[in-house]
Figure 1 (tube, rainbow, N blue to C red):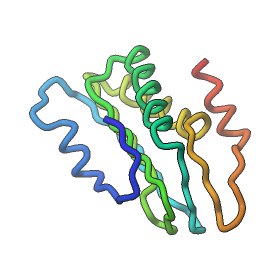
Figure 2 (figure 1 turned 60 degrees about the vertical axis):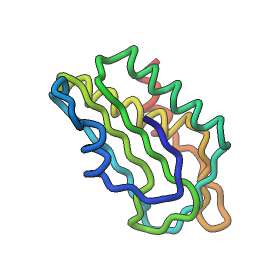
Figure 3 (figure 1 turned 135 degrees about the horizontal axis):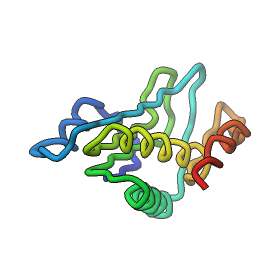
Length: 137
């Protein structure tokens, strides 16, 4: 399940929704990202962004044996300490869940169609994020 939204999310609620009634899940890995230091404004291309998230989730499912995935990315104006992103991966074994979560976060940092602005300044991509994503090619 993938969502782009302005509303905050509750990590425990999202994990419970993902695992409810499931006995085939042996590992759940979560990554939650928070806004640091300054107010951010996040924008996206409605429709295209959601399609891209669905495609990257499908790619993760071909690389690892996953039982379920949740990706939530917030847009709008966010303040320091606010939740910005949540990735949850669930699998039978921890290795698949950990690797898939890392893959999805590297994608979100480098290729997902989101734009971030700090005040009046657009945030540029970081070479270190691009380097991290290269290992998945």
